Each structure stands twice: as C-alpha cells, then as structure tokens.
Image 1 (cartoon, rainbow, N blue to C red):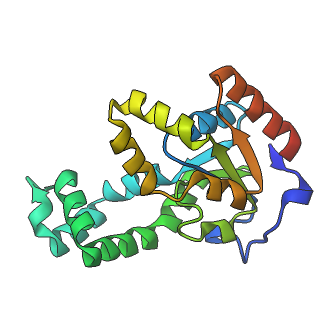
Image 2: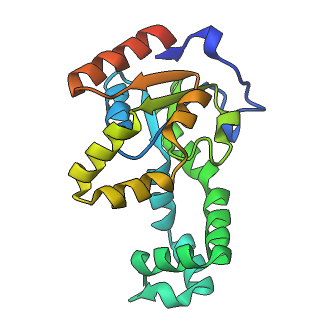
Amino acid sequence: MKLKKEHITKDKSSRLHGLEVPIIGLTGGIATGKSTAASLLEKHGILVINADHLVKSIYATTEMLSFVEANFPEVIEDKQIDFKKLRQLAFSNLEVRTNLEKEIYAKLPEAFMKVYSEKGSPDLVVYDVPLLFEKGLDQKVDLKVCVYSDKTTQLLRLTKRDNVSQEQAELALANQMDIEEKKKRSDAIIENTDTIERLQQNVEEFVNNYLDN
C-alpha cells in the first residue's frame, strides 16, 4: 500500500525520524476504537507502528533499566522496574516525568527505525500515537487521521469497558485533549460511533480514498 501522491505533504528532511516514505499519524481518544481501527488497517497489509509499544520496548532494555536505577533507585525491586511506583513518582514529580520523557524520546527514533526495517521497510507507515497533537508530532507526518467517537459514546464505552463510574470516566476524558479538537485538526476522520461492522466499512472507505496498491 502507498499513500496517494496528493496526500504526501512531507519529505525526508521534515518527516518524523527522517523517514523516506510517507507517515500517516493515527490518533484518537480513550474508548474511540483507535486500536481496533489500527488492527483493521494492518489487515490491509499496512505497517502500523504503535508508539506505546515502542516505549515498552525501550523500558525493557538494560540501558533503560540502568538509567532508572541510577536516577530513581526507589522504584527498583529485585533489579526490575516497579512500574506502579514509577508511575506514581512521575505523576507526583514534574522533574522526574520530564527526565523520563527526555530519555525515552531520545531512544524513540532508533526503536521506530528498528521496527520499520524489521518489517521490510515498506512504502507507508501508520504511526499509532495517542499524543499526536499534544507532542507536536502532527507537524512531522504527511496525513493526520483521527478515529472519532462523540463524547457521549466515549463515556458509555468507557464506563462499560473499564467498569468505572460516570464521574471517573469524565475525569479520564478531561485529562485528554478534547476529541472534537482532534477531529478539527485532522486531515481525515475514521468515524466509530456505531457497530464494528460500520467501523470496518469506514476503514475500507478511508483506504480506498487515501491509499493506492
């Protein structure tokens, strides 16, 4: 699969990690179905690189373990990172969070390119990244795509999926960029307010409109 020429807006010098092929930035909000949409795109043979998975792979390295052990020894248990303690520390201390993010982001390009090369260096990458706009990555991708569900649908799904109260669900949404803002700032929308079958149709429509074999 390739991105249609009219949607290629970057070159290597301005694209994320200096990639030579186009990147679609796929984003959404909590309980909008972004992961499901990503898996449907993969069924078309499209490489989807998941930002959260990259971060997990970085944390699994001995280099990152050494960094955390040297800087935040209180979160190390039995020579392993206690991620519950690390999250609590990061949420309560801006300096810790900033230092962790700086270290992670320094390692992301290598992790990204490793996955890309291992998958045969295809002609297109979909980068599944929740914080596409928040981290300014929208400026480094060719096409910005939002998997969209309205806020009411998000809340209904979240309360059911995670078995949380309406208030807890609203708080989770309040801690993210509003989905309407993401929709407004995106180049294309994959709507997911109905059934999985309807989402499949919408993904097919997106592929037909924006991609070539």
